[in-house]
Image: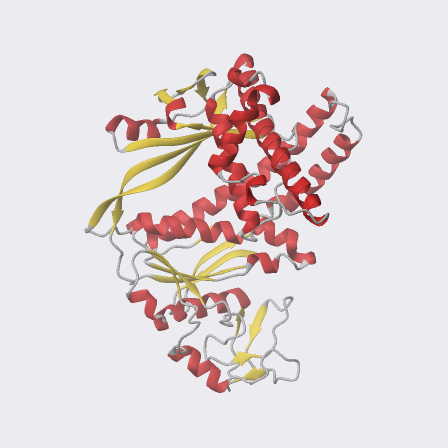
Length: 461
């Protein structure tokens, strides 16, 4: 990774600040005993059982009523089971003794959050955001969420969970513990997750955080995301100040992963009527460990880069990418997922609020890669394999990603939202309104069939 940040050691914080309550997450790895591992897995299993049992009851009820309706019978609305949080909670109270006579062995939090997560799944399905809820599989890890009263920190290295006991953490929790000691933080919930044979706890805290006022946009950077070079940043003056090589975390571990998956495929895995063998569990743990290594390395790089940007630049301009649409490109889908452009944008957005910076998303249809950063000419077509931008109008030749980053940095000067919105993220897509001056200049000189193959190679000369 190569990051060039002139004046990075002089990151400025504005004098005007305010206190705001925000939700912040803290994640730590646990070091449970064998008895505590069994207790945690019991809670995870109870959550999964409650979720699947309620989903089965609701699905069976709806299928029966649908069959009655198709047979010509009129089905009153009261015969349908509800899918809201309180409806599912009431349904569990009615059937828990017959479905799970052991339900009292685990804390009530695991059942309450099973109702909540299932109701959210039904809501997402009704609004078209996801498919119909499916049953959760056993043996693929899992998670359980505890309410604030069921979990608390006893010191900077231990936490206490109801029905589980005192658990040790591998690393110090002093940052969160100090918030709780000062009274500037309050635990909202804690989620324990098992991944690759390890247990992690994620706290959601409501903290009083000092939020600085929005800084004046004196230091501006445009960032172009890519695959060869992960992040390329430039100033409006055309100076390259950021270059992060793509480590390709997934591709680097792909051969190891394929070998581990082949070994696991030869073991007796979970299937109906048979439990997985111990050899399969060990082989599957190796597969999950490789996945975890790639994910952790990816997130660490994103955190380092985004933190540096919001501390040292006042205005950050990025592209409004349709990542979901880009993933439909099968040859590049694996590489785009490994780059994790959406996570990069998400982290920039919330960290900008913490440091008084602003993130501006440029128009999704702004041709940052096709536009010449010198004469503003727009190419009709630019193939993905063309990594060097050459302008036939003025003769400019430079790296394709750097050219796009310069255009994005200059785009900010024409965005009216830059001077009117508070810190955080603002979109300057410009839909349902008049085109901005820079866009008008491009549109006036652009070929009417810019994206077609019949258009000239350079437009706007």
